[in-house]
Length: 190
Image (cartoon, rainbow, N blue to C red; front, side, top):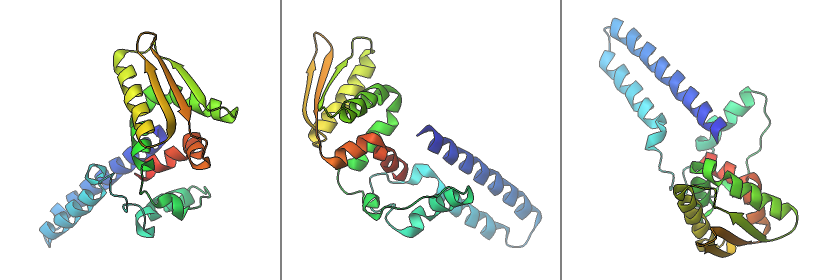
């Protein structure tokens, strides 16, 4: 997540710098100054990530949408393949991935525990939350409730007195793969 954010930040910073340079050139060139500036403003608005609707399930489904990502990887000689099934963001994977990505610092320990339990072939996770702040506990509990609501876990229970959270994980391959890293792909695409 941090890597992708940094890449996007760097890209946006370079794009803004390019925009400013083009604006300076356009201001010295008296011909069609306003139309050039409008074109650049429109292009900047299209690239502004705050304008992206993350809940639009068709946002990344066309080649035109994910081509810049593919081009970026190719420019760095990184081989990648596009799984067209993974691009279909209908369902709840996108929402869970967004929640996980946006709260990764708080949810990382839980995610690591889930992956550990899944690798061992078990399905029960026990998390001790007594060392977490109330805000972190609320974030974790909200996320676990979301997992339960979307059937990513079979059972979710929080014992408030002991501050112990228990999850019974789904064993479906798609859910296991999601927690083992596919969530990040969903998050990046959203």
